[in-house]
Image 1 (cartoon, rainbow, N blue to C red):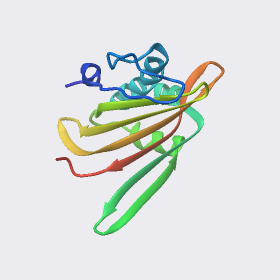
Image 2: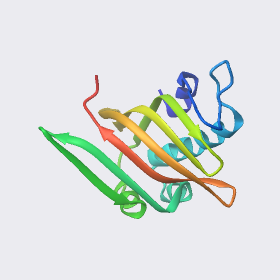
Image 3: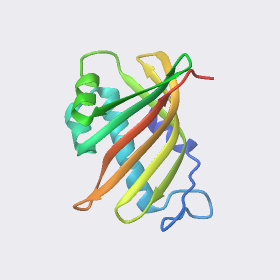
Image 4: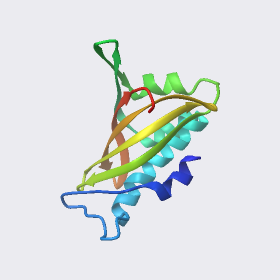
Amino acid sequence: MRLSACCGLFMMASCGPSSAPADGGLDAGDQEVVAVVHDFLQALEAREGIRLAMALHSEATLTRIGMDGDTLRTKLMTGDEWMASVTKEGPALIERLENIEVHRSDLLADVWAYYDFHVGEELSHCGYDAFQLVKEKGQWRILGVTYTTEPCP
């Protein structure tokens, strides 16, 4: 199932100034935020550096969290370091989100979701994504991504 097909699976929850309509759908502001995340993941799948750079804030960081046996391991990368690692030629990098939650104010938004990650057709891992977005000059940009890497159920 492709990322665009996942749109129907989203169960949204929000708090603060942003609020989801009673039917559980996204309001227009939340849709705008989620659209940036979707474009980012579509660019990741295609390994398109220009589109990734457009989605990321110039000071973006990405942090991976995982376990190595009993030891917690974290790895922090700048947006440029991360893009260099994923824009190399290779199979599609497919990340599918489920159960997305959006929290949003005028300048700050976060998107939280469970994901599964495939390299080409092969399931690699699962985990949780936390995207932090900032609105700059009228555009939402991803300022940070923190994600866990876990075995899939």
